[in-house]
Length: 124
Image (cartoon, rainbow, N blue to C red):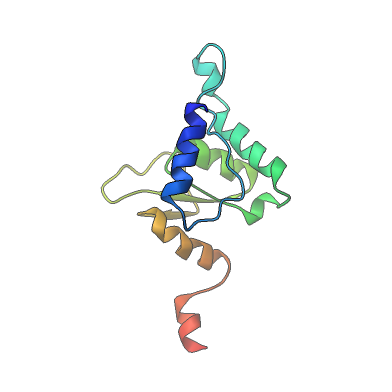
């Protein structure tokens, strides 16, 4: 198995409670000679791959990343964006729709997008 496949398998084992519908490599390890050019559209390629394999419009996706290239590509594709930025880390150069300190807080973002709030749940 390739290094990327092994990393994805390791991730799915670490997150055993998460259901993965699709796993795609991040595009950083393309075949052939490595040049700066080979990295130019890696984020777009990954997101295009996801969109081509899942029949869901971009507006129904939340792209979660700590990387500017993925957040920009997702925003340009019409997706919601969520930056994972721990306290005291740099802000990044791309403005995201949402910011969270850790991956565990992403569920709150999804709930907000779906119109579910903690206060609403308490009242009903």
